[in-house]
Length: 457
Image 1 (cartoon, helix red, strand yellow):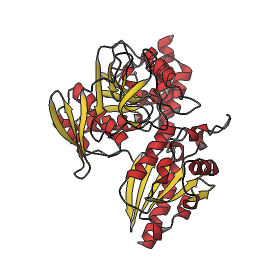
Image 2 (spheres, helix red, strand yellow):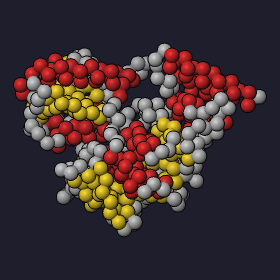
Image 3 (cartoon, rainbow, N blue to C red):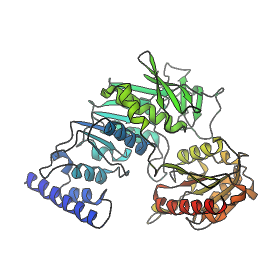
Image 4 (cartoon, rainbow, N blue to C red):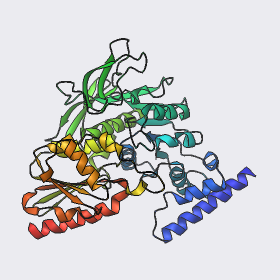
């Protein structure tokens, strides 16, 4: 009976994928949802690829999983990957279903699966990863993932003891995952470390998780990301096995030290968050058996997926598109910091971060704005800030409390109307920060800005 239900779920799921493709739709969720509805243990009966890599954590899952897929594909591997970011149980079932034959046997060599942290309990009992990479564990949406200890507990409870883990040594939450697992590889960054340790606006790790003492820091980059130790016991950040020792933005390279040697790689994106992402990918690929030449070959032909980051030139206007996860205070603050530290002056920022895709059938919650550090927007290189969307006045109030000059701010109540407030005569660069739920609106704004640049170039 179980076999019959499995094949029924498999074939109906495949039929749904064909139908959705004929309709021009991305079959990233519904086919898996149907298969699981027919048979909840569906994934447990699929024959998986020989190697399964899981990517989890608060920020950077899609970037890391797509980068791993890009490097592996460039080196001749066939890869199953939920590349569009459908990272819950139904999305993972959909991609495994798609890359299986009519008997449920895998057609690809490797599966690289982005897994939502809270979906761990629904995925890992059936899809047991050989490797897991986690870049960070930090506060996320107050509605789902704001409690970092709870998220760590879920991952630890679900993760098989045999999974080899790759963890960010500079994240005290992340580095303590899978505590009983002896097969651990750490990665981190020593390059461009802060000269002094400044207490961040928000920190998810303040007290020692072992003894409860107050943690000290050698330095902190942001939130709790840095090197920490407890003065009351021997707990401290682990030493990285893979360490970024230099970031050369002029020549677009970065250097990683491991096993006593240093190697230089193409710097695909210079945002420090993505440098962590890239170092984690290098650690994973090296332990998987790829050579430096193979990894560098993949990096030299890779880019951050355009739905996450893109930059175009239109006339005299430089347009930078940057994903900023709404309701995620740390991710948004890192985007604000990135805009502030980018070289140049006369910057305009369009912030279209809203809970548009997640504001039905629940109560409104804007407290995440006050967990987010808006002080980066006071940087003198930023000449105009455009808050777009139904939450524009909430953003305006938060920015005012952070010290942003009100004359710099423009308000646009529609999510896709920000381009109308750009003054091309006083803007050399325009940064568009948008939510994962607003990809279509972001594409519209990008096209409007390209048109504006051409008209005034």
